[in-house]
Image 1 (spheres, rainbow, N blue to C red):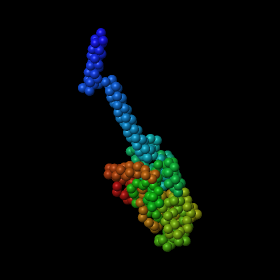
Image 2 (spheres, rainbow, N blue to C red):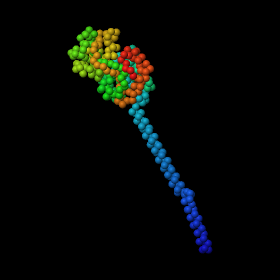
Image 3 (spheres, one colour):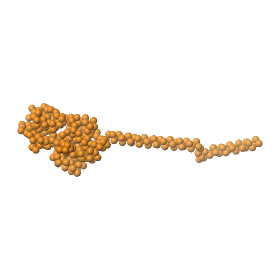
Length: 302
């Protein structure tokens, strides 16, 4: 009986050892299967996390780029807000109160190319940089001279028009003021923050700063100032025979300068406008607009 029991135990051990030995010959235990499944799950989870992180980083980068884009900002709100002053033939109102002029019409066309509408706001010219930075306007587009001060404070377009600062006096005394030396004893009216004010300071002239160039002309017409310094393009449109200031005329030019459009520093709208200028000049629409307002001779090839 004891022999039979011993034989049975021995057989059981052999079977057990054979089963255990089988795991080293290609068979997989439950523990090994579970471990392999856990490892695969961990790998998949890690890959998912990495993919989510990459996607989040990509989205964050895209959001940052959009936030930094003035073009996207303008397109999102649907308007290009243009800071101007009353300045014929660049920006002025017709009999219906519509803003027209070479700059105004080009601004409307540029806005349309962006899929938005142009909105015009009259600003204090001396505060133009503050208006830009505060986002009350998106650009300054009003026959703006590209001075060092302007180009250091704004992202500016390429120059598109030539200009100069000229002296305005009553026509009946114009022959007395034909050179810079003759201006010393005159009192001038100039637009605050303008290139005209810069010339008055440079020449050491006595002057009063007013809100706009149009106001400077009114000062001379009223006799409260002896003379004014304004842009030559404005003088050609607003002074002399057939204009509202037939008794005034312009005499000497004080400098040579160029016009550009100013955006917020770093704005991508400046590059977009340069591309628009090139295309408009190439297809003739820019020249046609200049001819409509009599500024074609001042236009700069793009």
